[in-house]
Length: 126
Length: 468
Image: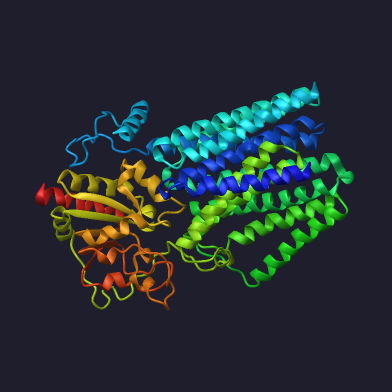
């Protein structure tokens, strides 16, 4: 059992190295935040120890562990999403007179979230 | 029946792990990164729900256990949600650091609780990862809180060194590891208590001597620690999802730490020994106009910028510290509307965590294709009319190309190749390396002495009035 777990651990490290090395520096902060959310998986571990707790100390430890892990996972994913939403190719400036090469600026309203998502997509296609 | 059930749970964990890998993979392009995050969320929900089903199936959980889980998720999730929604982008590094702290803390608690329930009968295959989890998790917990405090300014960002600090650190490390070996040899709660206490204090004494400018490296490293602690927690409770996810994060934190340290031309060991990077301490104006330094007024700088064909903006730590990202974006927009080709040169250590400057500029609505990495932008400086350096110092110093200086060998932006250079800076103070920047005495360079935020606003106003 331990050996299998260890093999999984080492191979996952290699996968991690491979996947992460390809991420551009532009996205390193969101990447770190995303990785941060992923270690929120410890919530699953916290649930397991809450299930096996049967005395006051056990319940207190489990509560703190679950609360910590939930804060990690919920906060991490929300803030990563918030950051990524800001990365745009080109939004229409209010004064729309943007220079040459700004022809891709087609989407109005830089404020609506849904519009931003579309702006990113259409930018990617053009 | 139980066999089939376990297989299904394991397959769900495998699917969740695949989602995490795919999610990280999609982060290699800004256009797909949001989808990557959603895929990762889906994996996380699947893994947590599957674990819930697993504990129901095992039949060990009682009502109080459910109440504990529900209350924990509500309280922790609520706090996390509020923090994530309200945080300013300039404060991202602190938030990431806090999430490292709670993640590491939770991982340590999982092992501590498991150890308590099994007690003295624990075998080595569990006690070894338990001890590692408790040591790494506790160090991460206290170290990350100190790092967040330094970034927030609650704790001084200057390196704090006390006499005999290295000996203290050594003693603490010996205490934690020695206690750990003792616990493995003869498991006892008292022994584990010593390990916890020594590790918590070690976390504090490890981060306190490290200066503000080195925080990008420290946060990356603590992120790697948290991942490793979570993987160890997975070994303790024999849960594959935790092992895989923890290893992925450990690897990513490790890579980012290495990248950051390389970009600062320092070894990770050198940074962790501390006492060097005092960062944003504004050194008093020393010899305000050193030999050969020419200063420039806002109007003259504005005219140079407005009539340039190509401008590269070099934002640094000072821009982030002055929170001037919106001002720089406003100036860039104005120049672009006049037909000037504007882009940004981003050094890997600009900002307070890896890639932080990119997020700050993205928040100010700067389109990401304009943000160029060092290797991509360096050949462009020779074709650039004006390089506008804002709050960046050591990363532009040509002295790095020569041997024998404090920053020799550090990768720098080739700003001095531009036809003319304007530097916005509060004073002639040094960067964290503590040496003179030869760029400032270059005949092509003009210094515009101002706070980044005010200076940029002045430039924008001048461009509007003079050539508007």
